[in-house]
Length: 310
Length: 291
Image: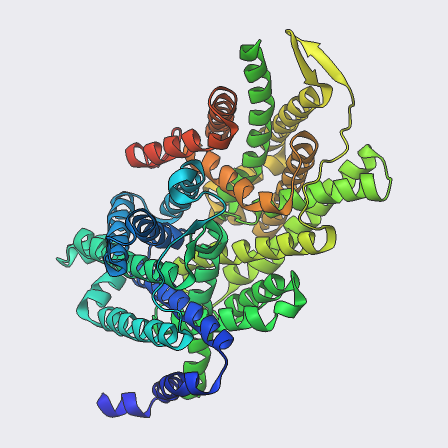
């Protein structure tokens, strides 16, 4: 088993990536570091989404509901009580708010499935978005909320924090998905009745998946607010942000956790690379994503693994 | 005064919602596909009608026709590009196909939306109305086109009802929604039925889109909200139940109009969303759904 892991191609790719990412700040500009910082936070969003969708089988169209809750809770607390309240307490409060949101989402998920649940998550995002716009005095409305504190003004510090955060949450989410909990989740996602008949507490495991996914989504959202210095609907709540996260996870390969991170970094990088094309960038990325879904349903990691097997 | 205004405006908007949702529920009922590019089809139809009538001077009738044709072509494209390859795929597990189709139609919708935005910018466009002028009805000044919209919507729905319930082809479609295998055993080619249904769907979405473009105007930003509203109406009424979605369309349409007039246009969609959440908690199969 151990030797197999070391010999596998994905493992070596991973090792090379980690080594490259660690020494990167020495050689590239602050702009690229900033881009990668965003990419790493997005990677955490995508990995959290993969835990819910890939393993628990829940069609969650609204990852931004959890992310937005985390981001806005942290942002509003900081904007209101800035000097008195430490930034890190705000971040923690954001993660907590997202967990509460995750439990709220989990309740209908235990009753309805498939497209019905997908719709509820969609509605949740729309409600959150309306809330932000309607309570503009508290949330900054459509203009966005600027927070007085930032984690650091040094691009390197921000980069390493985001990178470390991604590695730690990735390790936890990956470990969870490969543990017996991940297997039970997968089983209940595929056939909840049979999994229940085998004696597994489906409700408890699904609830746990929602809580874990919400915790990391919220934490990443809150951290990203204090990296960017602002929270706006366009970056944290809008459906199109959620769609990006879903595309990232599916592009990288569902049910792999790590694939989601690869997809996210790829997508952000691609968006930047294609930026000179202006409006066509989204079009090209969508066409590529559709192509991958149609012809390589297992995503990048699936291609990689297919290559290793051949 | 305001009462009648809400009644009339709400009726026209609800009729539009009903027409849009009918196509959506038809596709779901017959082939089990939730088409998340629905809003993109409607917007593409409206923008094509606008471009033909206002930019190329074809006049409003020909423009509307071009809009509906655009939607028809796009509906077939949706089926052949985003739906059929996944239904036929051997590499995607059967139980995952639903999720893959949701994702692929979503992406396809984004692609249409981006092409529309690239060719005709993101600005809101109002399609040239077919009937000009204003009528005073029950003391309310209403654009004649609003009545036209409501009448066309209900006519189309009525024609669809006749097609499905009174013709042989329609009955085959109905049968396919109940038992696809049984229909094939009776000698009907299932793929022909699916093609016909996607064609009908394209026409329905096209008419709804063009009328919406005349009534409220559209931009490429309307794609998401349009898909979401069709989706919520259909779920509220009960997936696959046509009469359920017609009633749900009126519930949502009037709830939105009431809120917009009596509270504030900014809160327009909130009560309908809350109602939807409530229904999902209490009666997950929808108001009139059978399970």
